[in-house]
Amino acid sequence: MVIWTIMNLLNWKELIRLQMLISGVLFLSMLETLFYYLHYFEVNSFGVVAPALLSSANFMSLIRKTVARLLVLTVSLGYGMVKDTLGTTSYTILVYGFVYFFSSCLAQITYIMYWKLHAITPSTASLLSFPVVLLDIAFYVWIIVNMTKVIRQLQIRKQTAKLSM
Image (cartoon, rainbow, N blue to C red):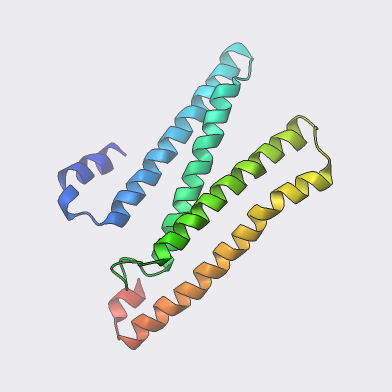
């Protein structure tokens, strides 16, 4: 990671936005891992769960998953390969990201309430986790449809080098 960061800093003018976003996801992953490490260190050293560290680790995990998901969606739309900009689609992606993040937060809270605290019924837990399932289905369908369009565009333009990637 240190070498990646140094190379990014040395060549920052030549980087495309996707490379910067990948670096951001890597940085978020490092923060998430740090918080989980500190949480488990606390548990191993003192035998006490630190709710603040665990909550921070879960929060970083949700942010990382959302940003990584948006990055995959952006690439599947052909950004950097077929399109230079996403136009108005970028707003749709951002709205999806916000909705996914808040639904994931709700699902994480539901998980804690049901499995750890036994404070809600199974039917309530299923109902509160359902939006994430719908968003996952929409995400996968959106990727498949757009990847098919990108492949079709590359075939029409006869860009075999990009198509072979």
